[in-house]
Amino acid sequence: MAEDALIRELSAAVERNPDAVELRVHLAELLLADGRYAEALTHCSAALTKDSANAAALALLQRCTAALAAPAGEKSAFDWSAAEEQVADIIEPAFVEQSGEPDIENERDRDVLAPSDVKLADVAGMKDVKDRLDVSLLGPIRNPELMRAYKISARGGLLLYGPPGCGKTFLARAVSGELEANFYPIGISDVLSRWLGDSERAVHEIFEVARRNTPCVLFFDEVDALGMRRANLQGGSGHRTVVNSLLAEMDPATSDNSGVYVLGATNAPWDVDAALRRPGRFDRMLFVGLPDSEARMEILKFHLRDRPVAGIDLKSIASRTDGFTGADLAHICDTATQLAMADSVRSGEVRPISMSDIHAAMAEIRPSAGEWFDVARNVVEFANRDGAYDDLAKYMRRRKFR
Image 1 (cartoon, rainbow, N blue to C red):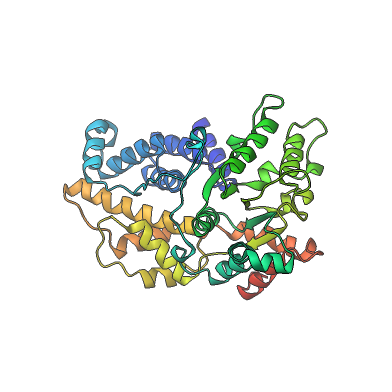
Image 2 (spheres, rainbow, N blue to C red):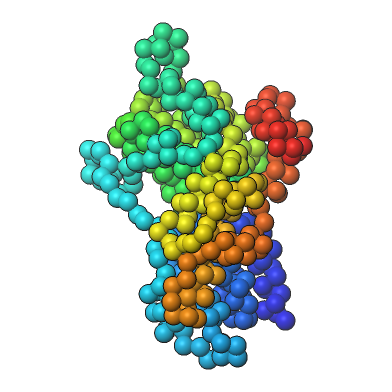
């Protein structure tokens, strides 16, 4: 009973924080031990969608698949090591890593900067988003004579916001590719430290690396966690000084960030400190909504590439997944793959992924963005006096979320 209570508690925690990979892996372990293999498999697939190289999730996925393939009544005595070898012989790599060498003069920065061969043309659909990117950022940078004529600057930052799993990081990489700039991605773990003063030094060093390697797209993921509203922080919180450091480094009056293009992504722009959204900081906001039909087809094609498939109708799937995020679509593809792989383990022959697998996966998976739009609706109704969320309001009216 205690274990059941723990599973319920962890399930609730995962629902509240669906991007927490370690929580999902822990929940999958408990479900596997409880004999709930299909549920465990679903959480393994979701974890691998977020972190395709997670060793614990991969090992659990193999065990779940092998358990589902075992004859009834023999699961408890199943030979896990043999099954994992068998699965390893069948499964195809889900992702193909591409490597390249960025144009980096300072050798010590090579490990943190990355090249980007992604362009906006590689981003399927999302025409409104790409047009606004071109007008607000790329167009002025590509036309310095016009910037001088109109006396405008490319300084400041662009904040991409919207529901989780809709491609904000991919768009940031595409911007880097368009500008032929080094791409420098920053997460919470790259900044926050429990030691006094280390987080502030980390923020300063991050900007110094970007300045040494211009042109550089400096991309901050989960800006709401790094630049949390100081009014929400306790007086002695060390997080407050991190916000102050970000403000200082981004301030054009105190820092020369020529050639550094600062982008940020957040699921909760309303939690970002107001000072970070003033001129010279993240002074432009761009809403990134749910993928349209064209984008959904390309996302499905991407996640099914290099996998054995037969009779897959991408257009039909895309028409039935309106309202799904990119992460939801990846989850569908991964779940369908595991179902086909389980059959392959039983028969010893590779069975292609079929529409029946896709339909079975879609029956289990629901759109994940509903809760985000519930919060966004309140923001649009009661906290949009300055018009910052007008684009979001128009989108929600068009999609009939309001």
